[in-house]
Length: 207
Image (cartoon, rainbow, N blue to C red; front, top):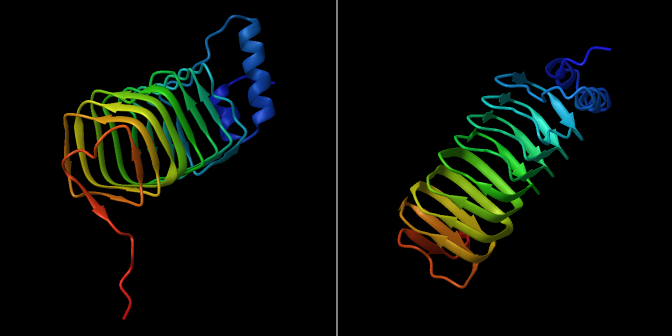
C-alpha cells in the first residue's frame, strides 16, 4: 500500500493515513506534506500532529475533529474552510493566513500567532488559551461565544473585529492598531478594553 501522505489525505481515508504515518515512524522517515494543496475535501478524524505542513493550502475544505499538535503550519493558507471541533496546540504557525472561513468549537492552545492574517471569518464557541502574538492582523472577523484566557497580542492591526458573548480572562491587547472594533455582551476580567473597541448593546431595532 502506498504511503504517499498527500494522496492518502486526498482519499479522505484517515485509517490508511494513520497506518502510513506509523510505518514512516517505524522507518524513522520524516512526516512531511510541505507545500501540498487540498481542495474541496471533507476530512474527519485526521491527526496531523508532528507533521511538517509548511506552506500547505486548504481550499474549500471541511475539517472535523482534526488534530494539529506540534504541527508546522508556517505560511499555511486556509481559504473558504470550515473547521469543526479541531485542536491546534503548540507547533509553528508563523505566517498563517485564514480567509473566508468558519470555525466552530475549535481549541487554540499554547501558540504564537505571529505574522498571522485572518480575514472575513466567523469563529463560534472556540477557545483561545495561552496565545502570544507580536503581529496579528485581522479584518472583518467575528468571534461568537467561547473563551479567551491568557491571550497577549503586542502588535498588528484589527479592523471590524467583533467579540460577542465571549468570556475573556488575563487579556492584553497592546500596540495593536484597532479601528471599528466592537464588543457585545462580552465579559472581560482583569484588564480594560483597549482604545478602539466600542461597546454595543446587541439589541436590534424593532419597527
